[in-house]
Length: 415
Image (tube, rainbow, N blue to C red; front, side, top):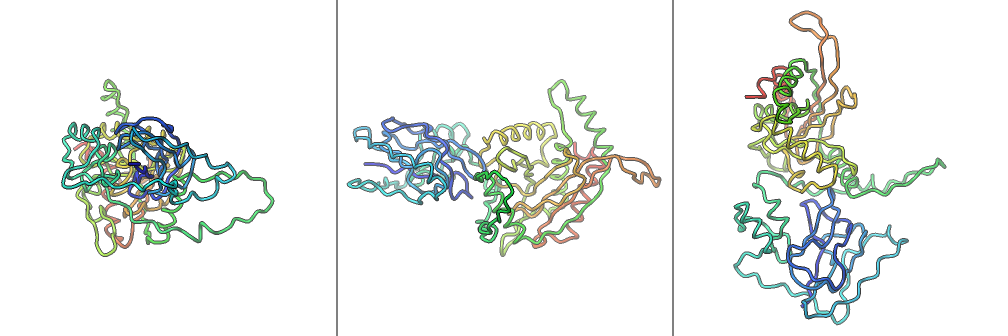
């Protein structure tokens, strides 16, 4: 019986993707867990593994096809005793800009795939079962994304506690922005087609500015004590190969400030306010494909050396497009630092469904009142953007004060 292989939803927010590359061809035999294709989602390029065994009977969506809707049949798998069908001809280059059809018509005389009975047993691929056993995961608590709810490799690899991430609400397309034509004034230009990541950034930031009432609060923070502590810690940790950045310490400071002011560690969810039990910090990273925010989970309880190691690993994966969904989806607040570019102060856009983001500028020598006298100090400006539906101005001000206190008295970051 032929089995339809459909475009998977590789993240909670994925509605369509680009079938970047096929790693199999018609006639190849695949086993459960074999990597069949590379699919570009809204945030990263991910591997797509087989969940059933058989022979590739047809490839219905050519490599390089963009805008393939989740659920579209992309290939057909036949039993090993069934004949393979010729590969579908790739779409002509001229038609590349046309939207890919949401479904692919099945060939004549080919019966539709019949879902296998599931019954009461747990349906999981052998590879997923092995990984789950190694991680000590209870498969009854894992939701499968494969056919008929089958649990596959990605499901168990990405399995995290329920509070680790909050699915973003479905983004409303910014119809006005998308459909507004740009006039041609006769100026020479080169048109670059938007990738999936840039499309998602455009849609989500438009949604954020249109639907979230932002309030901005800025404080100036003296950095001298933090810079001194960082130098001492780096000297002490040099033998371990650890080199802390200022950003690593700021991640810790924001997380501890959220713990001290829990009214800001929330998100607005329609008719309820979600109050989070830990501070997961999303950190903005500039990747070749666009901005992405890997997450330091439970940053308030982690040492700064561990935060530094995790941040370096996540940033490297982000730039290589290899982040897994659980590594960038969720978070309870965000940190965006443009200080390395010499930016003094800026207002960041909230990343929904979060209710706040902290924008950090450059530390620079400024006149500053120290112990009642005018002196020169290293000062940075930090601006918090708050969702005013969820966070009152006074609560946001308390968070900014807590952050300032932690940075100016940094020994509290080591407690």
